[in-house]
Image (tube, rainbow, N blue to C red; front, side, top):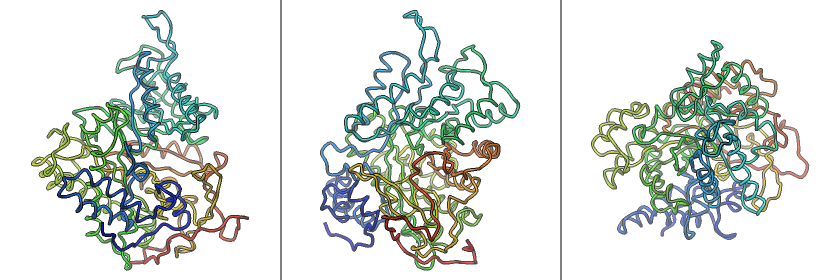
Length: 581
């Protein structure tokens, strides 16, 4: 295979991250790893097209325009390669069902996948079990058992288990659930979130909170007849806990299902551990990200033609991953091939805006992002219709897809193409955190702003050793007064997430950063204001936890024994004075 000209090479912490996590052998180069991944994924193509698409895949990888998810880098070229990052498995209200949930979690986590589980089907604590004459221990008990699986796996030398454990807001165990994580010894392997289920969405919650109403407790779609749940008191506890410890988050399942392209086929029940994809039972995440800063030229203009080309290559790449993947469970394999869900996302949004001279929190910046993500959305869907004409629509496709809330946001021409050819993928877009993959490219991660203009980053090496590096965005030729997450108003985070979510069919992983002394009452009001338009919400208040991985530093502060990591330099342009940061 002819290697394209190298226009990207990991450096500094990016090089360390690539070599430690994604290179298959100690001497594998960036070029070599890109060729390995491209070759593995191109095998999904017919024999006469393998060479063509292998070269196309290799080119966008080597040039750093597209970054597949970490499991793809790790698994490609290995036998029985499991290339997907995360999954959702069901919880069933029986002994056998609990055993199956635990078994599924062990098997999936053993292949490196994160697991999301909504335990709402489990009967509440104290409910009578007629078959045995006993009483149920409740949904939180199952969560604790699942969490213990992570302890055992980690104790045996395995990687840390990534979990999302969730419960519907109208489940009778909800008060027990939202407080359990305050005990730092409980659910240590999991992120926890409250779910607003179909039929009880954000507007219902807002109305009940403001009116002082009670939420009717429900189990498996039916009222339990038990005591009502004080909406205002529950919300106050949720806000207090999120302010104190960053959890629970809130997942808007009502919005996710109303927007779902497979609303007629299967309900979405939970997200993956980082919240970027709402999934049906046995759903999976097939992740990759556009490196947005690569599409801004020296004059600060977006190269739309290059972006169009890479989006189309990336959609085919991720669709091929579903074909060549070795699935951990038969149920996941069947579901994945039935819906062919993709998760094409982005990294470096703030880097992109800075290169264009736009402020992250400004109206001009959000307008640019609105235009950018609208372009990504329509191009990705257009390519999925092209793939459907070439390879066939996803097996669960129905023209009813066009009645979904999200499909109605597509351009008329694309909707007409879907009517003619169908769609190759039930969903295509997401925003994942891109933590370590973003480090490889030296750009901001996902849609997050720069954490601070200069900061100490603590991290664990692959060998498990504690390490640290000072990352200084001033060395990247940014203005000295760069706007960053440590001093940005929380509403600016909400506004950006809302804009992006309007163009994303899956979900958006976004952390709303809070100043240390941010008022709880203001957080409550902001959260309720934006809850109807976002599918998930997560907070982090600076200083709320020990050993924070990011510690902002003043420009003159030196950290003994830690060297600075020079990030990728560029010269931001300032059209129309919009870069007055």
